[in-house]
Amino acid sequence: MVEEKVDNILLEARGSDVAFLVVGDPFGATTHTDLVVRAKTMMVDVKVVHNASVMNAIGICGLQLYRYGETVSIPFFTETWRPDSFYEKIERNRNLGLHTLCLLDIRVKEPTLESLCRGRKQYEPPRFMTINTAIDQLLEVEQKHGKSAYDEDTNCVGFARLGSEDQMIVAGTMRQLCTVNFGEPLHCLVIVGKTHPVEDEMLEFYKIRTENPEQKGNGIA
Amino acid sequence: MVEEKVDNILLEARGSDVAFLVVGDPFGATTHTDLVVRAKTMMVDVKVVHNASVMNAIGICGLQLYRYGETVSIPFFTETWRPDSFYEKIERNRNLGLHTLCLLDIRVKEPTLESLCRGRKQYEPPRFMTINTAIDQLLEVEQKHGKSAYDEDTNCVGFARLGSEDQMIVAGTMRQLCTVNFGEPLHCLVIVGKTHPVEDEMLEFYKIRTENPEQKGNGIA
Picture 1 (cartoon, rainbow over the protein chains, first blue to last red):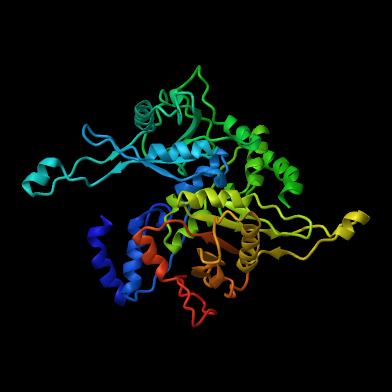
Picture 2 (picture 1 turned 90 degrees about the vertical axis):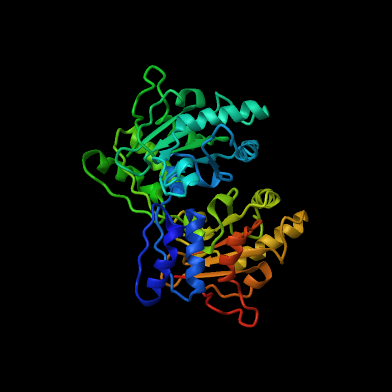
């Protein structure tokens, strides 16, 4: 992980050019902001080459980027840890008619509980939240809070492998998207707010056809 | 303009490969969504190569992208036309502690009033709103509405030519940024919401030093 190697990266960068490559735009994650802060504190020059990010690439589904509210993250629920601070944010966005981008949990290099106890480093296999799991969790939280922020009939757009050749984009209700197999990671989910006619026209191309829920979308790649 | 040439583009695209290049990510503008809708309606295959956009490149100032509310556009005021629907949106974002990206007006290929009357095509010289003008207009609107959504002491970040070698990034209050000469276009402005310590640390590098308001920022290029 970046956090563990950052000192080496910065030490090297004091005497030579070091490139640090990331997926997406570097400033999508606090980790990278922190890396830049530390570099600047050490008087290391930093040059940033920006890149597309999930936060703008989702524009491909036709929902206008300036009509999104606050972005939320959906963490994997465990038996004892079911944080749902995203609920209030989604509710707010929806009350304002705004779309919500839900970033889905990624668990890589998580130490096993066993290894934590024994002090030896052993990691869980990587896990990436699917759209199906995200919707299950979202609906569970709605049931708990009961403030009708959204429900099974709320329109959403599911994205898998956005930006790659085999990307998949499907628009439909939460209930419909739950039946879709989106395949390999990464997945993300947009909860649709109030739409403009141009947005509707574009979403139409991605709409799920109920007679064939396993379609690969007719996504533009 | 794209709108005028779109039929030719699409006709050509039916028989051959046509590339259409844009600044930023293609889906930052409704025009491009509309182009894709029309292409798909004509059964023209569309392939999108995503790119960095101002909407994620602003992450460079250290304010976290997921802490932004709805994006607003600030149009050039004229003597008779002073639309201020952005005010309510900024107010909402600020009440929620969210940052606001203000996209500043760009006027290119605007027909002159004279040419409209005579039916001959003559265009105004291109105009790009500066951060200074944007702040003037913002403060005028605050004065009119008087709901204290923001004021001269509200923290902002001004960006000029973001992503280019000579980009300029300056953090300061509205009053301070008004005294800065940001130079050539394009400019955009972020109104800062509630900040996290990591955000503050990063903003610190871009803070205006009052003894030298004409500084070029100490922006990382």
